[in-house]
Amino acid sequence: MKKPEVLIVGAGIAGPALAYWLSQNGYRPTVIEHARQLRSGGSAIVVKGPAIPVADRMGILPQLRGLATRNRSLTLLDPGGRRILQLPLTSDKAPTVEVTRADLSEVLHRSAQTEAEFLFDDTVTALDQDEGGVDVTFRRSAPRRFDLIVGADGMHSTVRRLVFGPERQFASDLGLYGATVPLEPDAIEDPNEMTMLTAPNRMLVLHPSRTTPLAIFTFRAAQLVSCASS
Image (cartoon, rainbow, N blue to C red; front, side, top):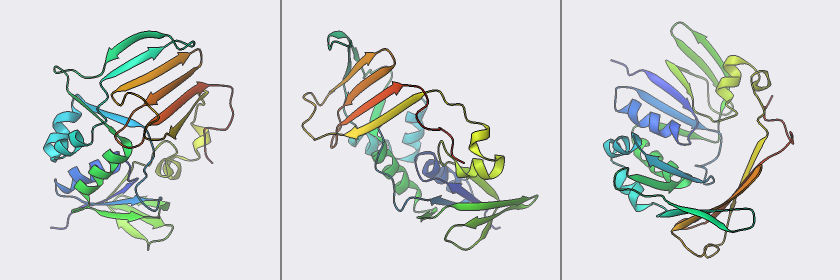
């Protein structure tokens, strides 16, 4: 019997994770990503709660623990740089594993690539659905037909735009902006302590990492750019 074919648009976190589980349950997944390779940017992601047993069942939990950032505490500072309080980030009662987005993406990709097809430097340009499936047109690859399409391509999803219309019809600008900047390896003194400075309408986080520490800046402002793509 022919396996149902599923196209997953987006090879970030959700895409490869879904591809793994679909391949384990009788489906043939294809993951397409418009970037030329896995993206290396982004801040840290905390794997906790129900995600821990899921990662264990996937066989990737030991890898994630080996890649953990090992942050032990979070120190909060006021606008003058004075310490407000310090919070523990680890607990034996509620195990967590914090890894960079790049490391998590790479681990999930490796776990899925043996059974899933990955196509990079390409994207979907048209979808034509009928009762039996979806005909898909790509920017580079030849057209193909799939039984199901999954949009895992992020905030400005191409799949969502093709199915529901231009993003500007649905987007609501919240006035929040953020930037993540890589730092020199020795820029943060304590590799086990994350520091957060908060002030009205803005926040700065210094985030240690095994390789590249990060400065994460978030602020609220009047609309600087449109949050919606066309």
